[in-house]
Amino acid sequence: MQARTLALVLALTGAAPAAAQVVQIGPFSGAFNESFETQAAAGMSGFQPCVIGRVFQGTADLCSPGGAGAHITGGWSFACQLNPFSGTWLYGTSQNNGGGYCEYTFDNPIRRFGGYFGTNTPLAGTVTLEFYDASNNLIGTDQYAVINDCSWTWRGWESTGAGISRIDVINSDYGGARVMMDAFEVDPDAGGPVLHCSPANNHSGGTFATLAGSSVSGPGVFHLECTNGPPAEFGYFLVSLILVDPGTPISNGMLCLGAPIGRYAPAAGGNLNSFGAFDANGTLQNQVGTSSVGSGFDVPANLPTPPGGVITAGTSYYFQCWFRDGNRSNFSDVVQFQ
View 1 (tube, helix red, strand yellow):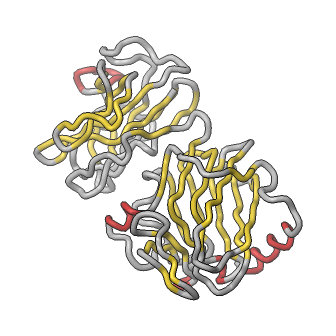
View 2 (cartoon, helix red, strand yellow):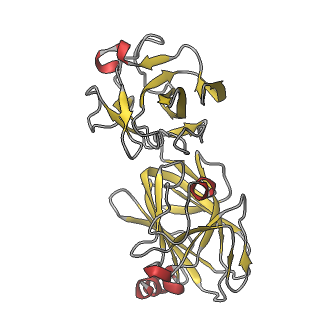
View 3 (cartoon, helix red, strand yellow):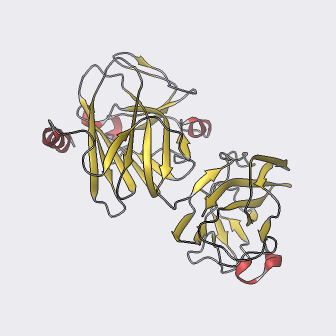
């Protein structure tokens, strides 16, 4: 790991920042954000191979490859004391337990990535970031000098070419570790899912259901996935052309769609029925054969009535999952496609 890092740093010496397709950008508010608050509340403790509960509203993983160095903490002391930039928690990677550099992997390619970086180490090394596309091709690199005074600095990047599917963050010291992060933002690649009303209300299992794993494979070709739901409960998807954010309280959740609302419910029948049940991992498994992958729902071109008609490229559609929650009901967040 250290040899790989040193070679890369030497190769970049004197080069312009953010090589190839990736350029530096200033602060922005992204479709997904991450301050590591929900994972800590869900029981993240000690050092783990990956962040428990995933990151960016369930759309990505943040891991310490080869070991168990991923750590969420309320503060970290070494050469100095580093406290969270926002909220009550921050993320950092340790070289202990075989940990080293940290790696983000995204379910769907992203366009922009940024947040606040800091460190508590006594060594003034260099941090290198490597950006990869969906085919694992290196599409850009950047590096910055470590400022070892326990301060936070914004750093952000945007791909001007292919979408970003993986980002490695590597310190030149400590086996690649000792990089702390907080208050991060990402934007999906063009055509990817955008979330609203997120996070949704927590359900009886202690977390919130999300449509963040949904995807688009072409104009008007959508696949919905509902994850982090309450195991053994049933649900189905809703659709509207109108978003209501923050939504209307109904039972345990927030309905974030405006009338007319279409229901991909059993009564709709045929390819408009999205009925499913959450498995032990909280993924909605399709029960009626309208998913090509077994989970979620393949959205057909025809819409339920209301609203009726067919999906048209360039028009925004908003989808939400309704599900039973004990003796009541609840809703996921909303995913927007167009």
